[in-house]
Image (cartoon, rainbow, N blue to C red; front, top):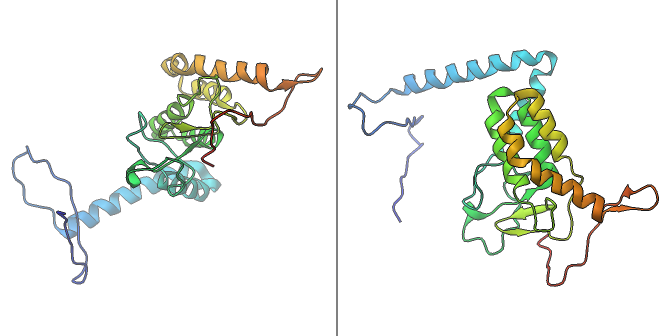
Length: 216
């Protein structure tokens, strides 16, 4: 198969994206690329200063979260799984299709990522992929992966609270309109199917579903 091989045995190698439709320009030198990377690093490091004593925490959490920032053709947009290597897709054709979304893990990642305005679009995309994986029974599944999902169980319905916090911070009513009905159905399902006893306390658990084989 066609492939590109770069020898790293003779020193540093720089890669730079170009525009094929633009007039031909002299390619940047290795020094130019190094200077550009250094300027970007300095600009990003300055953003951490806004977090004061927690600047190193911000840097570490951002690095860990965005390492797992991926896209799968099975979803409408990129998302933040808990791990790149965790996969519940049945018979994935290749690694591009291998992934799994866990509902409240991903929703917590949405909230954490949304705290930085520069990452708002990432947080929104991740949130949409999770909530829109809702099952026909009304709840957001414990896991979802390439059409396979847990139809027997969910996790605590924190999505509505996170949507409220997103709206308080950014006032984007379109996101509320997009996800409100899905999140309401999730909460309604909890009250109808998981609230028990005189006090109507919520009890998490699993239902026996004929024909369902858990990928987990």
